[in-house]
Length: 332
Image (tube, rainbow, N blue to C red; front, side):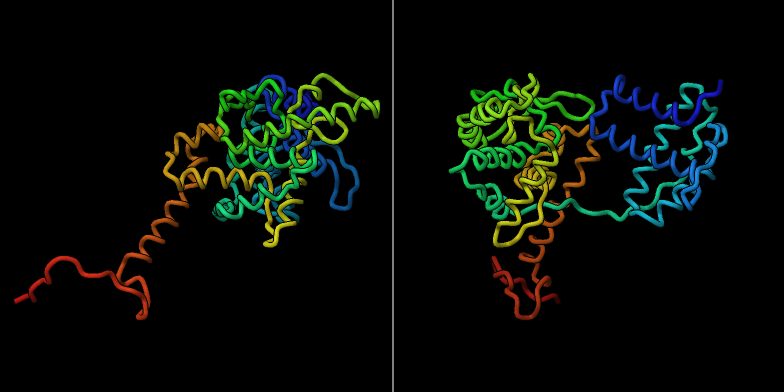
């Protein structure tokens, strides 16, 4: 019996989870993209059901029609991501011998506008980190979260995945599980260490509150470094809300999220003279090209140096560099 598209999607997601060690976030995105593709093929524009096409019937025209539908309802970045999902899925089907060729391979990706990553100034990120009220248990936790996001450049999924055994206070090191379940060891600074020590002294209060409320207390939650008020492991969404809440309370009303602090970490490291290879290792990027987007800092520094030093960079009222040495005789 010929395998259906629905069954193939289910097998592909199992392959990503069991063999490729895809993160829960990646699995959710792939499942959402493929379910949308399946719905598009099995429903009319009015929402009426229609027969599911055979896998052999899905060609590059089918995929282009799906992308055309997406263009009407989404952004270029979203369309590009969904096309990448389809390419990966169809490649899996072709490698497995379920289809002969990958029809998504010849479909062009939308041209995306190049956008520099958002980042905060040194003063702004200091204001954000110091925003939590550390007289409360929640404030101590939030302060240590902000310190680690900026101090170590963690992804939010890596932060919420930290366990107590992943932290070495004596060495100032973290064992982080990144994308593809790859582990790396990264340092954290003295400010983050102080914040962590303050938080760990009160972390047990969340444990006791959970037991008193007779809520679920599983071993994974007990090992988690960062806990919510009920004693459970913090989620990525919760951390996003924490960052957003403290950012909006500042006088300058910063628009920030956990990934902004990761970008800020990389930007400030590069600005201070760190090489790209070191930043790549710290961030856990598989490819150096992913890290190279932070070279915009060097460009900005060049512009500042040019504007402050070149005699023709400023207007008529601008300052001019003082002449040095003996005056040069006029040309004969």
